[in-house]
Image 1 (cartoon, rainbow, N blue to C red):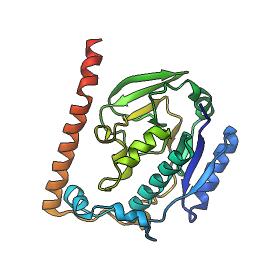
Image 2 (spheres, helix red, strand yellow; image 1 turned 135 degrees about the horizontal axis):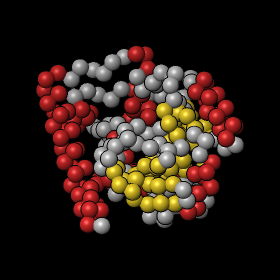
Image 3 (cartoon, helix red, strand yellow; image 1 turned 135 degrees about the vertical axis):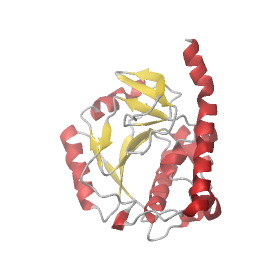
Image 4 (cartoon, rainbow, N blue to C red; image 1 turned 120 degrees about the vertical axis):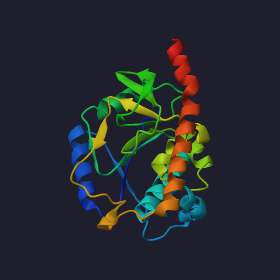
Length: 247
């Protein structure tokens, strides 16, 4: 397996985050490449993927600029992964790189070939052991582990993400969990090799702005959509859960 390049998504206006990541990487002896994140307030051609009517119907509010920038940044990295035909690791710039990250990089040649994507943090939600490689265990989650923080991505999985991302309705991390749509299972690494860092304000909620009020109708629509997602999660995972019980 080709050693993946570690890409850190970073806005030019966040030099303190860049410095933090560089300091951590140097201490661990790993190399980083910084990817200039899309500024959601500046506009971008990829924002044409947003389906505003469906977005409002399912979430009750429009995307925040930071959410749009996040979507476009990850989308561009997926394209880069496919174009290079090489696996990559995508990292946010406000995380802690754990001491076991170099160990993971050395273990990746042992990764089963049917695994094209997994999160690098250990999600605190129900799941089951899915695959093992080296001293690491991949868990398949029964529901969204939330957040991206960092993830491994192979070209085959990037192609699947891109193939179903013509319409943006949910945040990008939620979209990546829709295994029944794009066929990329929701997997996470245990023990994790990245974690959330304290001390950095969210760029998605930059400026301290709160979410737009959804109103009674918007609230009902949002809760109905959440119920539908829970059902889809259950139906998608049911065969694997039954098989696990049988064994």
